[in-house]
Length: 102
Image (cartoon, rainbow, N blue to C red; front, top):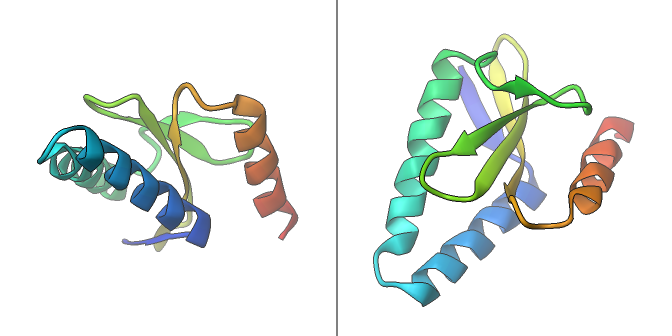
């Protein structure tokens, strides 16, 4: 199974990495490692994360207050958002519903 990031999810990732690196040297690398471990688990077990209303799934990134929102088929996993848990859930809902409309 392969994976891909939507442009919005790529932007989420870059913003999170920038924020963590600005707080402490090496923290962005730890975040990226936790994200990579989460992706590896999801690629092996794509149905292991909790279902969400948008028809996708959400997985916690261990050690960080972020959720990875994704959809999947038998061949690929698409990361829709990397969302900080304290961000406005309504904004996330709007973004995910826009993806459903596409």
